[in-house]
Length: 508
Image (cartoon, rainbow, N blue to C red; front, side, top):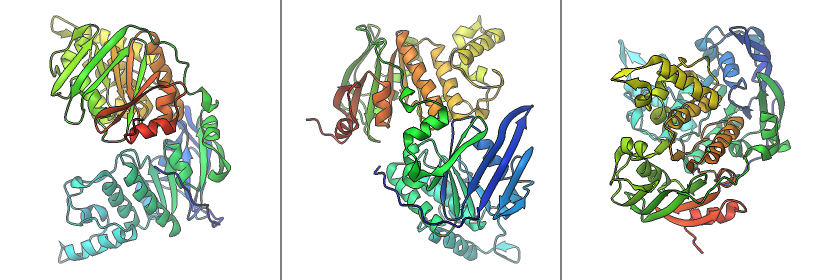
């Protein structure tokens, strides 16, 4: 995606929303210690920080979900108190979260006016008036989404637009967006950015929460960085750099993100020969014990399908997979692949990697039933022991092994998936977008874990759409284009331009 940004305009100095010296404690532990945030009308303001920095808690306070233990909230310069979310809505403050609250079984028009007073005659909803009011909000966003369609049939970016239209229908003047591009393509991101800029030009104040710093520098006017429940700095985006932001967020240099290489051996862990799938075409490669093999390519290049085939979760048409000298049967299935030593950490951890309503210990145990059972009986003590060991080894931040995974941060959810798979002691660990939606500090932890696994003899095959990440975490990189390997390079000394040329199919 081409990164271009517009210079910020002169802004109204009276903040649309201001949080001053906010304090919040949970069970006596400070989640916020004097946090501050000031957002002007007509600006896009980035709120940045690692998972656990206090961003989510601050957002929940300014939207009425939590009450602060100290500090003040001002709306347009006036002191306010939000007893609940509805009161915050009436003040024009609306938050849209990564998991959109779209009702899939009702129409677009009904979703847009959900919770509002619906136009009716004699107690019957006036559908024509309903659609007219809904269309007015979509027109503000320059969207032509069919109003009668069920919301569940929309694309991710269309669902985001419907959620934005609903916020505008409540006359929102402060919009808080939490990771809005997590499931969008580059083209869809550009469409969303155009809409956000148009809302900014209407005077809407937008708080933009994202771990994708390139987006922040393309889109936002100012930024606020939090760390350990405190506000560290607020400044113009134009006066900062990505490296400075990373250093401020994590308290160390951006150059310290990636551990040193050098753990690869000459022992072959997996050999893939002439693999054919729906999109994958004639793929052949080897990966060695102790090696981190990065796989890149544009969306649709076949990189994720390759990992699914290797993990047994997707059938392949032909080709051979050899692990530790043993040839896997054709399309072995997940169970046989796991038994052979291949484990997958999927891209969609929330829907494919964990059960959000289950505890940490149950999630870890599900993939390791033979290890925690005997004679058909599951041994609870062994489950707890395995979970505690995984939590310690991966530094999972949680109250304990019985805490539900859905209550954890994105980075800690990813660590639970890793703990579950690492308990199997795999020979080959497959990781699809291992740091997607994770803050910079937790990314560094994941990179350290990957390199530690390699040092212990595991072959790690990791897909990433971020070229700097591929170069930083890998020993060797394969690039795919239209289902085939278009290039192979040593990661050390590789550059973005070369990898991007392979992504677009250039092979010379």
